[in-house]
Amino acid sequence: MKRQLLPFLLVGGAAAATHYLSVVALVQDLAMPPLHANVLGFLCAFGVSYGGHRRWTFAAHDLAHRQTLPRFFIIAVTSFLLNQALFAFMLQHFSALPYTVSLALVLILVAALTFTSARLWAFARRGQE
Image 1: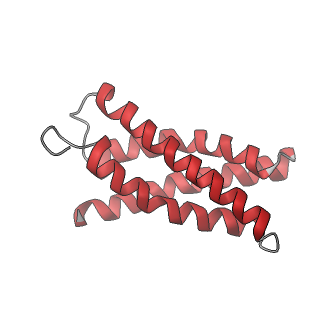
Image 2: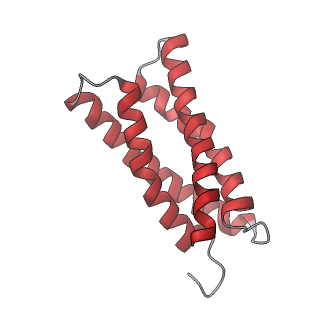
């Protein structure tokens, strides 16, 4: 698990940065509401996250995509739904905080759930599930 933590943080950081920067660009450049932009930000970041975690974090490139992709997608969508709910809560109840701060806090919080789920299920080898 220790050897997976640094790659997870780097890949997760790249995915989070993709997500975050996409949301900020959509809000600032297209005047999109933050919660709508968050959906598109998630979709932009999914490919970065799946590819990086499959190839580097969990070294699961030998596992079939038909096993890993649907599982990771379920984890990612579940994590995103939690992200969206927490982000909406933060926007509604902590409106004094800039949306960028709320989004950053939520992305960090949800990352722990994603790591554990991906490690134990999405990229698990047979017999480790």
